[in-house]
Image 1: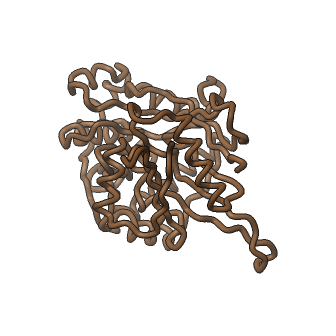
Image 2: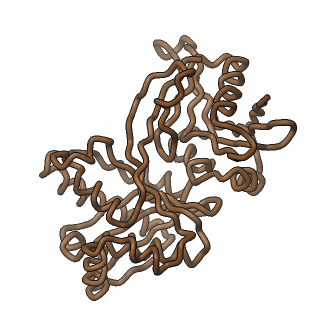
Length: 320
């Protein structure tokens, strides 16, 4: 039988050790929920079987309010699915334990993000609704680097070579570098808007808060591509417990023209491989982006041409 322990405060090093022991990823880091503004609501969930730790996840205790004064039903929010030791517990046991914990804790729903998650449509015993479908792309970095490079589409390899002749790559942990990502995102947003794919970019105050919580002393990193000393593209990404995930990116027209995004993504793979990181999630697209007519089909191809494996994930709301 699975038991779930909820802890409000866990020392960061201790939590990282627990997550690493069950094969977790950056979405199990405290910083992800800090970035989402859940500072006072974070809980660390530890799954045990026969006294041994077999799973873990990070969550937020969300208490809905009505008319801003009346307390509503409680919801348990998870930034991704629980990580678990496959040989010690099954997914069915894991979710049964999570449901039991939620009922005892008086939650009405469990909300789980799709990112680096599961396809819940195979769990017929759960009472849930699908909130989002996502194609998530991951790359196994435990392979030889030569094998990793060969898995990249020849068009991408050509673009990487072209970009390396014109650009300089720089990893920078400063606030200025993180703010540069915002400026570059604005360029990408304008380009996407021209193609009918509008999205908003958060303001400077938001980026400063995220920097302080995630990038200043946390797992966040920034890599920039420069042409003649000017930023033309950039990626922000997180590294936690031997795995990585890209989180934000953007480019100017000059960045797109010089294939800067291809070069930065390649450099990230190369550097993470050298550090011994085992896997990277290079982000997702809507499930419909696999269709050639979809506005994000180009992004879909960009990711899969890096030799990434596509996984269908579903974000769900589970009725407790």
